[in-house]
Length: 111
Image 1 (tube, rainbow, N blue to C red):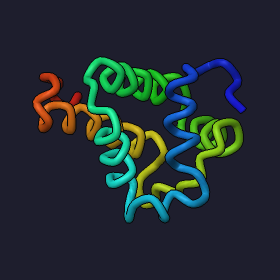
Image 2: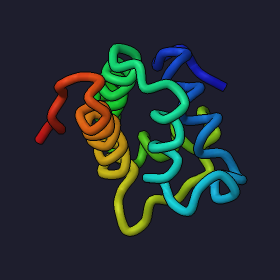
Image 3: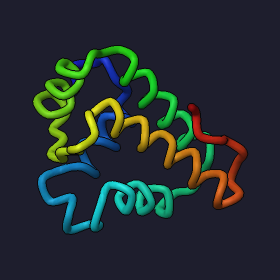
Image 4: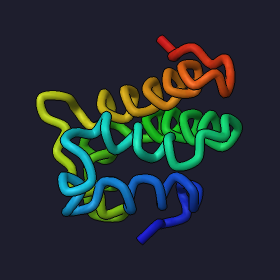
C-alpha cells in the first residue's frame, strides 16, 4: 500500500510491473521497462516518472528504500548485484534513453 510519499503513477508503475510474476512478462527488468514504454511512449509522463524515481532514490537511504519498495509498494524483484537505489537509477536512465531512441523527446540519461 502506498503511504502517500510517492505519486500514484510511480506506485502503480512499480507495483504492477515488478510483482511476483514479473518474469512471465519479460526476461529482465530492462524488458519490463521497454514493454511499459512501448505501451505508451508519450514523453511527458515518462519523463515525469523518471524524475519521480530520482526523487524516491534521493529521499531514502538504501535500507529504508529496500524496506519501502518491498513492504509498502510490493516490489518483488531483487536487483542483486545492484542495490535498490542503483537499480532505480538504471530504470530512470532507461526511461530517458527509450524516449530519446523513439524520437519522442530529447532527454539524455542523468549522470
